[in-house]
Image 1 (cartoon, rainbow, N blue to C red):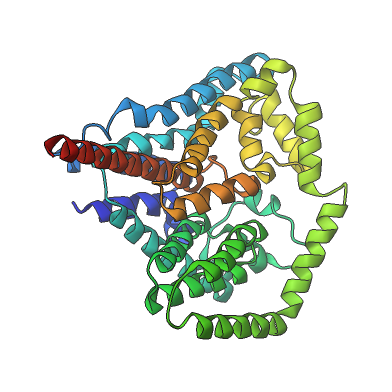
Image 2: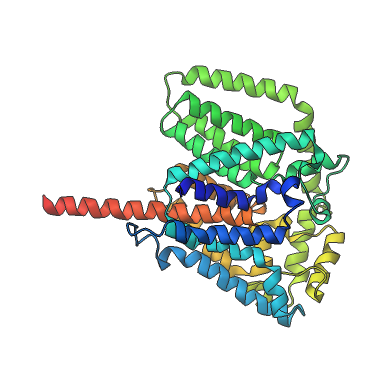
Length: 406
């Protein structure tokens, strides 16, 4: 088994095969989730080799997953005692979170950065292809009514709603940041053109939270990269941006108008969710600190409250990482943000990891670990942090040994 292929199939399960109807009409979401767990654990069988960096496959780097599961476990008591939701009901409702077993599995398999990037590349290509096809054939993707209702877009038909639900956009963003990092480090036309095409796709995708993180990084890269053709490239890029804005004026005006309207309206879903979850939702201080537990819709008072909130346009999913705090408490967030701060603090981490961490810090509303896709996003981040930490430790050790020999 090739490590790239193993990671690629893990990511295929993470995006749920993009919810393609041809697959989802045969297999239920729970069957897909179970199959994803089986495949993740299969890495222990496929790569049970003797030559392995034991330091990487250690508790030290598995701790984030341990702390996240610990926080989730504690939040289950809030659901039981304050939300009237049985322990077993919560255990089943939050089943997606157990996909964090991907972290110990990938630390055991130990793919190279090249394996991960190659898998991200093909997932990105697949995501773009599916997104394009969705606009041609509306029923290509199978979505349940709950997902559609959670994203209200006025004056747009169902095909417009579907584009927001093409799984894999988080993984595409990781790949975009890697390609930007590549041409900053060493410019090549192939890398630059590939990154530019991916950014054009992201703009067409029209997810403001993603654009808000990627576009400033792209502009920063225009200042940082070095090439004999830099002046010509900047002129061409500037002209392309101006022409692009002119020909897509309606789209940009709509996005700007919607943004201004959203920020100015007290009835905007995210404002309502922030106010509600911080002022009214949690029963007491324990729930504020350790979370309210993951609600099971229709199966408990806590789950019924979630359905009632949906009818008011209040979704914890609108809050991203803040919504994770609402459900699972502060422990998982401390675990995750300690990783982010560590990457930003140390120089030996590559620039693209820092770009990702800055995006999470400044636009936390789009990132979460409720679904396989979101969990895999963070698992890749945690693994690459461990990967580069070990590289740095080995480099320091080699330098010390060299100096000792001298």
